[in-house]
Image (cartoon, rainbow, N blue to C red):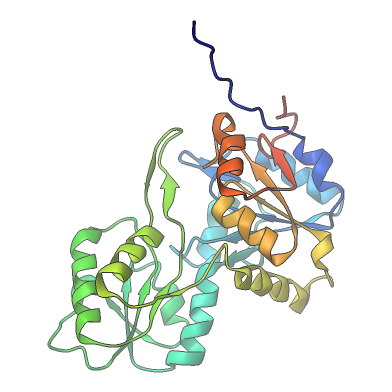
Length: 295
């Protein structure tokens, strides 16, 4: 006689009940506000709820595929006019700051699309798509940046990157640390963070990474808010994300409260087991950010 092993159930609470205890919320983008189909239907009601109660928000994302202006445009096109450029805090912004302060001049090669190269161009540097890299003309290439994984053939791009780094001792910046991203309800695809990990292992050099879970990402976000916004403290902020290893661990290390949503990378059926296995524990768990989405 066999006994069926039941998976432990995670305690799920309402996002609206939780968020009312905070002055601001940091949203991750994918798995929280977006999925493989686009903006999650119904989240406009969540933003209206936040607006009515005076709760501020920012989107803190590892997405370095396009500028904050273009990232915001995807929400505005869906009628979410509250999501302006100033509400987007991308890991690409930290990479741009590093390039501006440390590299300063010369050409910078990048793995990514032309759109993602925004973060290099606005640092005042000349861009070189890695697929156009000429090993015979690389003396003035001052850095390599991993930005994006979509919209181009990354296999030859990685080979070019490896050969560049074999011949040049230059800094390598990873502007998106995500290992995967969702392409359907049940499937994921390899993201640029995992590609950078592979190249790093091949060339045997240490790369510089920006984005969650590094507390630097959260500190940058808090400083960004304090420049023009209210004087928020850590206790005023809730980090809401779908991935334990980035959103939740990063928020925990930074010292802000965290809420895991089960609408993205962490499915409800596995949530408790994943928390037990990793030791990464959110303060709250929500089904999603939609009204009444709790059982």
